[in-house]
Image (cartoon, rainbow, N blue to C red):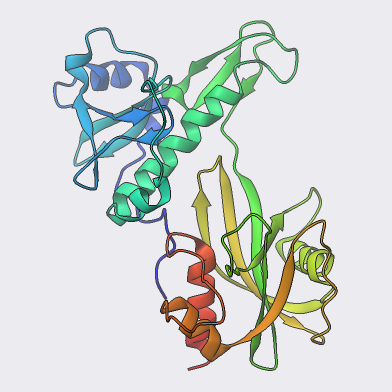
Length: 289
């Protein structure tokens, strides 16, 4: 099975350093310390690689988050990255897809935590301003001392299978012909299996049981954990909730394989390889070979 996108980061997150102010100060002074190049939340790339500058060349260091250590060298990301003037370039996902696996994963973590800081400048308890601490991995309220930490939102993404076919759906906003796995956020007090069953029923009217886990993926837009599963459908009757999705259909394994291979006569367009839906479809298609 192909590894899900945004996984495989080769970095020591150095959690111990987040609690050791002296060690963090030494890391900031390390002449080899590096700073990730970001344009707002987008990566600055050169020859399909992330770009890094020497932290020592920055003068007074901007607010930073410690990403961790790579071969003992501290790597940081700016918490308030500049945004270039003019129109923003397109093709972000295509550019990320060309990155080495480890660099795409490193960028995903950086993007999520930087974006979290932007959205949590004020205390959820009392509304006062917060400041960063723990090497950029937490915020603390200036008024009530409440501590806040980056959070990840769990999302189930799933295939219902019936008689050798997979149930896929599409959003109206997607490119024509694109179909993918159904998905939805877990709700409070709900297990993964219950969320898979609920979301599948809500979107397609199909009831599933015997849910099995396949893989997971961090998704940094802004900060989700995609949990890929397959469930067994009780029958193949579809009742689409058009408030949720535009369409849902059953596809045979050969049709899924053709779509994943990008064949011209495939019955639908598959999700891109960086998305865990691609991993999920690939795993399902391979299981029947």
